[in-house]
Length: 196
Image 1 (spheres, helix red, strand yellow):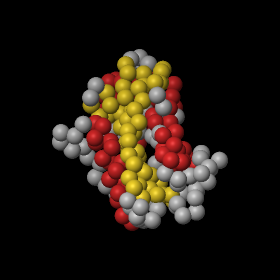
Image 2 (tube, helix red, strand yellow; image 1 turned 45 degrees about the vertical axis):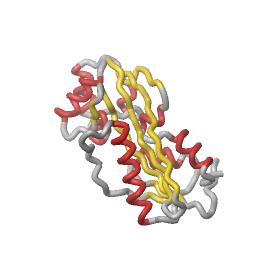
Image 3 (cartoon, one colour; image 1 turned 180 degrees about the vertical axis):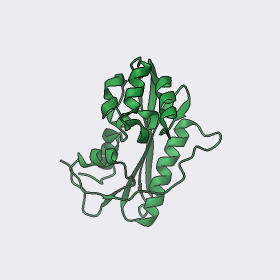
Image 4 (cartoon, helix red, strand yellow; image 1 turned 45 degrees about the horizontal axis):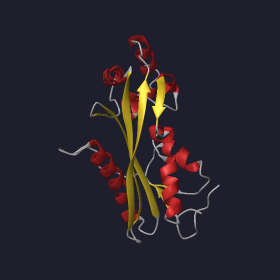
């Protein structure tokens, strides 16, 4: 569908299977280099600043190793009433998160960064989508947790997986909720001349 211009090799700074699969839908070739960075939220950092910085830090870490390449990095968070909901460490945390999300709207925010160190180009932005989770019963939540799907997902659910049944409404990009705002990233890659 798209072509990567010869001199513009792409690296995805992620090991997320969801991001890898989504980027592959463009029909382009790219390398995969997962970055090792501290993803902790800093004091006094807004959620938007936080998710944008983490995406930038990921791109920068990989970009320094491969300065001639175009690096794509992203970081996705779930935000409920100003609180960042990360990946649950256990069943208790997953239960708390899903109870917090049920019957109300929350935001999914993905900071993304496209960087070429040798060219001195960095583009970054944040995509935001509103998601409404149906009013789940305690039993539904417990049965979903037993699938083990929540444990590597921000907010304890996967819209593209078994958890899709609980998502009643989405305002904004579905791809952003999965973890990569592919429309926005493709538009920027075309604007930068990385894709044609």
